[in-house]
Image (cartoon, rainbow, N blue to C red; front, side):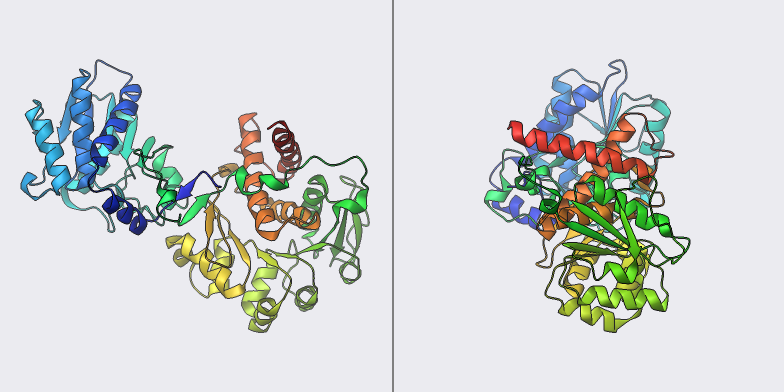
Length: 498
């Protein structure tokens, strides 16, 4: 079972209602106080707490009371009518006041802070903050930078949509986020990672998956660990499948080479490249093991999996080759120009939908927008819904690439991948991903597992390189290929030792 469930706000509200008799707010405030005590490193400075007009403010009042009990100097900024607070938040406010706490109506401008806590809105905000609250958010961000102090958000940074990851303006730019009951999708995709900083999930003594199916998951090794097996000695190259890469039009041969090298180094027994460029190389001197032939010849080769798209171009010849690819019975990875051709020709879309063999699509937001006949802004405004829509419409497993890649299956399930870094925003990274996934398909991995593993490995390999001082600035796609091979073998060894 995946240990990292994600819940949308509607599901979290159901869970909260089911446990209304339990003091979840006290637990949330206690967990906040514990982390805040470790973050407030400059003991000579006070802690600034912004308390909002709802239950997020109630969590903040509990944390404030408990921090005062630990002898922290706490300044709580609050301007709502206490009589209009929700019942639990009102009780938390009274307990704070009864314990000797007090509030002020504005942020002091003559104080330096050891920690700022955002308890304004959490997951409850569905529009841009305005008025004094907007000013508080902007001021909190400024003060955290000025004082070089942590900014801790409760449940979700105020101004961030916890379901979609889109942020309103202004939005808290947290260095740390403590989120309650379970993870929220919006913390992990789109603007979420930039707004949340380090995330800590505290379950408040609940086990939500025992009560309500998760809406989604964070990609984990557990999603594909069953396939991480040590190879037996009595094998040969035919045991690990033949992968084909179709693409490499003139001036874009490098894309096909990157995909081929990735497939080779993730263990496919044979890798064949079918290049559209008639004047393309007959051998890859960087990986002479690749077998290079014409695109037409490739489609007549005995393969176990095929990727169509890296460097394919959008010519009439490319369109014809895509159509032939769709007619094969092979597991198929579609990327790059294959997606653009699909978007421009609904006849090809119909062929894809009617295929019996599995297919995987790995669009970036602009390609996804073409496929769904909408804008990039529409895609980015709700990446999860966009990925689900693509999976349903095209009958494919989908990886919507970007910050927090969203993986969606045809039955509506989704995952968010948390590996990866900004160094991957460079040419060729998508080609490497196509090669990794195709290699796993050639080795008879189920399509869903192949996609989850390929996406997670791709990002984790880039993270390992950055950890070694290689990037993020200047990180290249070709560097990720070798790192992915090393990491994948580490995963296999790790599974063997369990």
